[in-house]
Image (cartoon, helix red, strand yellow):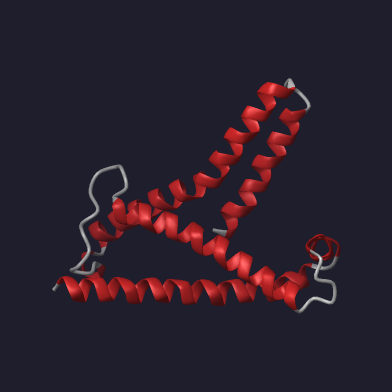
Length: 157
């Protein structure tokens, strides 16, 4: 997910180049379209990767498949793959917001612009703390999803 986040930066670079080439009314509509696609693209990518990885594991490692899950067939992702894509993106956004909120809470200057300027101007080692917080929060969110999933399977039995 972090890699996809960096790819979105390059999409914004392309959009900024287009801002100098196109007239204003068309530009505004294209910016809205590109921003919507940039927000939805990681969900689609994770859904397809999830689906194809499960097809690979089901065919080459059939003993690794859980008996409660469905067999991944076809080219298009199933509901579970779409859920994985959506949940992965939501976990990424939520863990980022919480991590930077905690960093800003303990920052000497709680101004949002100052915190982001600090991260851009200082060494990359300043990003270690928010990244560790993001990973811990993401792990807890995935554990929560796993427990809910297990609870639903137990209730279905």
